[in-house]
Image (tube, rainbow, N blue to C red; front, side, top):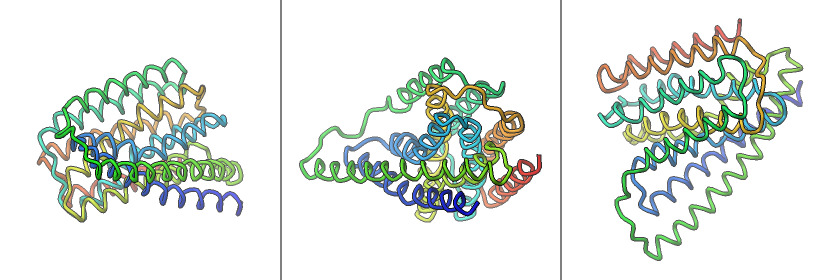
Length: 308
């Protein structure tokens, strides 16, 4: 039991530190190459902060514990729009621009809904993995179709880009190692503690792999960069639902084997996504009162998942 806890804690800490390097390197690379703000917020940071979920869930599926991987996706999606968005809302009012309301948020909701449809029957096939991956490519094309502000790259910018790329690659290596330890500890812990892999994935692993989003959002909130907050969180949910689930399907996730996860877990995820969107659309922002409500919903969801 102690060994499992050590593996899990060490893996989550390594994910946290490496995720910071990966996100920082990816964001710097995007800026060095003069990519648009949409790419930085929704695509670069969204993908970067979802890298831990991608690695952890894919390894879990490969090792024959798909419930852990699916629980990680569902729990991360829920945490993004309740725990993390709620914390950001307590720090500062999170404004939603018209383009976010019309474009990124609906895409995020649609991606989560498609993911829910594929797993609600308790099975994730390779064909469904192919479909999710194809939808991811289509979504990326749609998000990045706006041209960059500038295509000229100076020698100094090229050097900066190389440094940023190296930083991102080092972060990715750390994420891979952290994911290995986190999955190993979570799997062993689920067996020793008598808990389902789905619950472990939904709670401990999901919070651990969401640490990069949490750190990014807190920094952005303190700097009043609210556009980056919503871009990161909605983008992260898109990648979780399409890229991560797609990768799990491609490696042969198969039968998930946790009905409480595929029913209540997935259902709560859909409710949370709709709730966060409605709160944001109502006043084009997430206020402190909204933030408290989202945090309460997260606490209630975790409590129910723990007892069912």
